[in-house]
Amino acid sequence: MAAPGPGEYFSVGSHVSCLTCLGQRLQGEVVAFDYPSKMLTLKCAPSSGKPNVSDVVLVNLAYVSEVDIISDRAETPPPLATLNFSKLVNRARAEKEDKLSQAYAISAGVSVEGQLLFQTIHKTIKDCKWQEKNILVMDDVVISPPYQVDNCKGKEGSALSHVRKIVEKHFRDVESQKSVPHSQQAPQTQKDSALSS
Image (cartoon, rainbow, N blue to C red; front, side, top):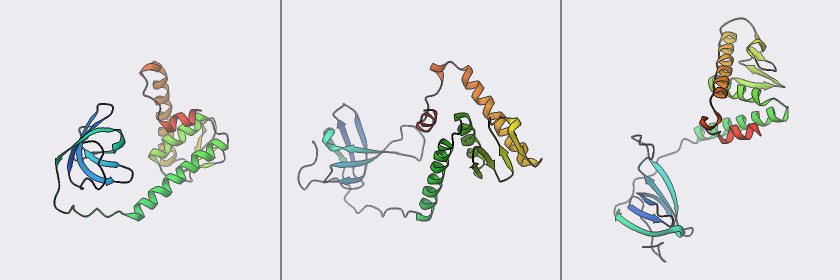
């Protein structure tokens, strides 16, 4: 069957198989169906092969040549899981702060090397922010341009030592990536390519 006709719909929990106009076969459990837009959401077997996870695929039925219902669900689907809104709000706030920090660094004229070092440190130590062109870590360690190990200043102790080790490792990793031929390097992420342009 092609896209559903007037009054036809897919029950949540039903198992369907779709053939796209590109010849791709999708099979999975219906999670949602929006009749006006003809959008079908399927929970499919994971492409990663990992257990206890699923791929969620949005299918525009305007680009599907056939849909077969493997099994229809007659009973009422289970209730949706509750969302932890405070956790979602906190995650959104943290993401916004990260983006603002990146924007600040770019507008302040921080070098790409400095931005990449900041991201590396921030992965390990969240208490990391910009202070003009300097990186301030845990309010104890200041890394000034050109952001080398010798540019790490602060009270001698475990914090300074830890930050220096992160900086050393960052530059070792950068050097090892430079020694790998360009065609063998992993593709840049969207964030990396935005920073390098």
